[in-house]
Amino acid sequence: MWRWPVAFARFWYHFIIGDDWTVAAAVAVGLILTALLNSAQITAWWLVPVIVIAMLGLSLRRASKT
Image (cartoon, rainbow, N blue to C red):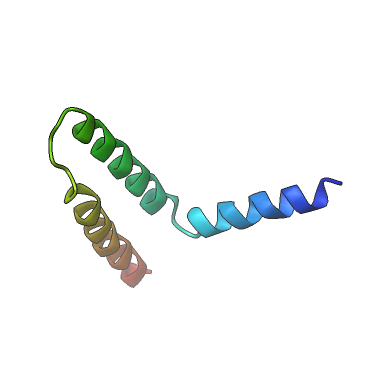
């Protein structure tokens, strides 16, 4: 009975978190900040792409050091 829901939850955990939880956390923070800025009538479409590009650079730098 619990086999399918557990497998489904594990899939999403590994899909979103993967090997580096910091990237997922940064994207989540970026989405939250974008929503907060938009609710204050501030254009913030650019925030998530900037965070994604910055986290990609940090992730690649960390991966190249190992």
